[in-house]
Length: 297
Image (tube, rainbow, N blue to C red; front, side):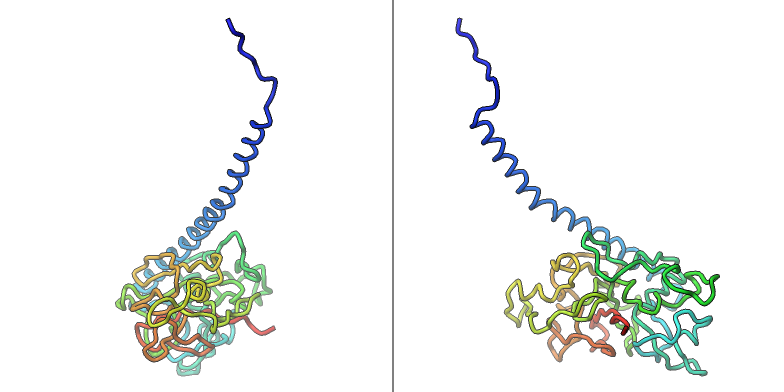
């Protein structure tokens, strides 16, 4: 009867197969893990905006169906007078008759902290690649005039709110009110606007952005230039008026292919005109999601 030979160890061929298998496994992990992490980041960011959306709806139910808009109806977009003021008039710098004044975009979000008890950390885009220069707003970060002040006593995310808010919000300092009865599929919040400076990064170059959608004939890479810088530039988390939140690969995802980060340029809604401080929507259905520029040092 023939005897079965037992191997005393791995042969060269065996080792070669092991090395090839490990190389293949590592290659797959390199491809799969970033996607899994990116998906997880989007889930966290989406959960934040979903929470904000629900809080906005509750807020609007208490304020004549109008979504958060800080200051008075005649106020403009700008630096607040005093984010630690003891009352509303002094916070926004209102006139004695209640008119005038200025407020930041972030102070609209802060109304949800002040009245709806939404935690400040909800307004940060949590990603494995943390946004430089952006941190959670905490009372301990600043020297408050009154040590007894709480989050509910303040009016904004500190003197430089851009450092504590990652998300862009509809430009509400205009003649167009943002109310619950507006178009449900209108985009009203999203990741940071790519055409505005961030705390530690300059705005993108608008000339490099060219949509793929008609009448434009841009390439995929040129179209990606219009995305927020968050989420590896692959797209943006967008919140709509009916409170649904989705990941959109292109910024022209609003009503009639409206670009959510620009205002209409005549009949052009897909590319549009990038915002500056003081920009306003061109119409009631024009999504113009902006964030405050960093405060001057």
